[in-house]
Length: 609
Ligand code: ADP
Image (cartoon, rainbow, N blue to C red; front, side, top):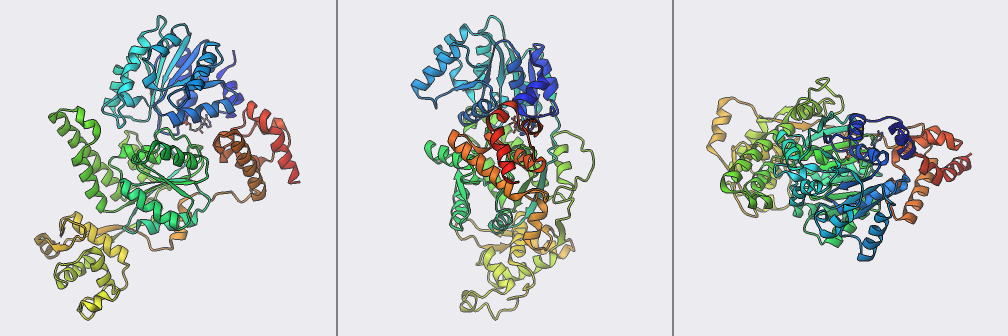
């Protein structure tokens, strides 16, 4: 039998295991159940795929998402590992063929949707099979306390109990709370599992928080500075997703979008365009992402603040899975708090199954999580330290030098004078206008309306001509959030003065705001990220290899990263291997890939002379 190191090298082209992978593999091989908590991108798949290749029988992988199965199986096949998936996306004929092959023992690894497990056909199929391992991906789906409860997961334990010889059960999740862990243990009926929680730090991710109301401008300048990058823009509501999408699409960015309101076909198509890099940017609600295994996502921008740190870290964690540097930027505006509270008050669909008291408890818990999320947006301490502490880890240092706090990209500014000016402007204009009007008035923008209304000659017009309207609007948002200003409901909300505002100004207290340091956004954005290609890399060679990857991927109908990741291409460019043996030492080049594509790659390199 091959050992785990040679399998890692031969099939995956990696030279060493990552944290947690080895003990998990060893424990599975010794017959012990597993409960593994590893952050997104940590490399959970290898933990069950390698034992699958080493164990006698077959491994079943239970996974909630059809799209993920297809990609994972595609990637395994590319690595020379025989695997298949059984789910509703197959035609009856394909399904029958897959079953025949399963019976013939063609596959070592079979991915299956949880709804299929307890069907007669499937139970009959596995009855005579030697199943050595059942790997449960996204195991938190079994818990109502997790953020993705799937009732079909609760049948997994019954399914496993059907076997005369019980297979090893290995559960994987990125959700770390004690309650969810306990549920996984109990509801999957794990038998004294080997428990492991690996470090939550993702050193290759840059974390940034920017306090701004001009979010679309920020995104545009980021995209302009990072033209070749692939990334996800998350927004809170479908309406926002569509608004951002149409503006960026109209401005010519290669972008698509995704939310639960689209038809199945539209969702599948848009997701596919993103995964295959035909549209390298996607704007989406949080409905998008679980199971998206695109390793070369280079940025995740949050247009709105998520409801919890768990949600934020899971979404942000989809960047940089291949280990390359990537940016995770959260654009925060005080208005987000309003939206978040609205969403919490309205509850989720799953809450229907809860009784009144449980609903109240759930709501209270969500408000607590929201507070922690808001603190992340406002903190001036190292963001990485904040994240690690939140997930119960002690950071190695109080400064990571790879977040907006450590880099001093945001500074805390005293904005009390702006507060005073806003008060005066709201008063002078008769408490009849909204934030945009007030900021235009103070900055001195005359769009014709000011003059027509007679405000242009009013005291205070243009008083803050040195302060950007964005900052004035941010201060107004902060004043609303703190209850100093009142905002009416409706499509055209107007501002009025709360009595607490005068008390605040009289008290001598100060109001501060965390603002991005004044610098051209160009410089800021570039500093935050990774330079796409190191200087020593030959761009022409890189482009030729990318073209080769593109053609190959198209021919085989798989995403480009299934052929090679960007990291692998960069290594090839850096080492310029001249023969197959040298090529094998490149990360991501396993034997199967070298056999399939080695000669073409060497020829491309030679062709460059
Ligand atoms: P997760 O399921 O934990 O989010 P994946 O299993 O999708 O993570 O792995 C993330 C990426 O890391 C994949 O591209 C995978 O090939 C890569 N990877 C996993 N293990 C290793 C390793 N030991 N060395 C290098 N890359 C690895």
